[in-house]
Length: 413
Image 1 (cartoon, one colour):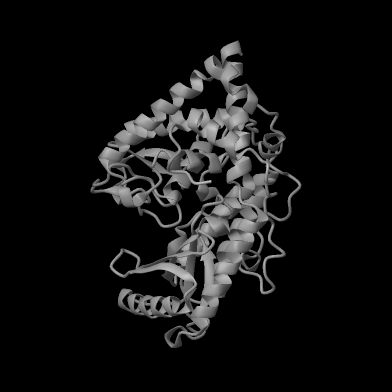
Image 2 (cartoon, rainbow, N blue to C red):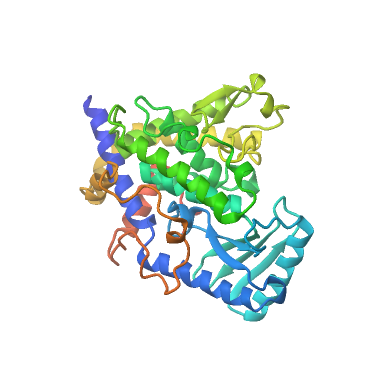
């Protein structure tokens, strides 16, 4: 390896370690989210039209892919005997309106806003913990997707936080402005890990071979258990497969190669779609379920085929994404030229030495769903990342972000 390449890798390894130490959630971040869930549950119990409903978190919090500033997604699950409840859009709108009224009366929630005409009606609010919440009704599909991502993360959980932070810094992780949402960005990370040589993750059809959204019907417990059992067997088989080649690439190498892969995806977006289910890209013209092609980029939802998770991305944002990739690549590749200027920030990151390799001694790959839901006695059973000390390099990380990602005025610390 050339000296310049070694310097680049060292620079990036140090930067990644410093950044992750700050953006990874602490015990307090976990506790705050459990407290918010409990407060919302208390309000739901006071609403007559929501009698018996359960408050279930989903999204990045449940999949353990959230950072310190991650939003909290919540589903209000109605009870319909033992069967999966599927209320219509008008009923969801009415229920969210009732809930928004009760939340405003509570007085502990900020900027409560009901968005009834969205594709999926939602209620948005902020909390005193600076945690934003999106609340929907009967989103079992979202709950199960989150748990699936948690299980996938158990196979190998490298570098996803860094990718999200990079995207947020360049303002390309905001679907409201025509860029990627967090879910599509996560799927792109999975796709990258599937298409490396050797692959780090398998095609998701090897974990669950069907279209999960179509199987979530009938009795709730039976439908959920069927998905769990199939995934448990397949994940265990994958993790015990000694014939699989092991990819030991560092976080820095994975990040650099992800930028190249994302650039390739954006450049080929007019003709090729991304299928994490199959673990490969496909010609849009040959996939009848993806036609007619009306999107700037196509990232298929592996659990709800053929839905496009990147449907909000527009052509202008694709150009912005390519610009962000090029600028980041230029900074990373020239890192060795200014490493002396950052000498004060260079530390040996033992954090990465733990994070790089998958843990082969962990517990059963698929814990039961109840272990991921809110515990009755608070958050003492939550497995949280170690909290950085008060002196952990916040200023250091700001410097790294500025050098590595560009201006960081969009990132709060």
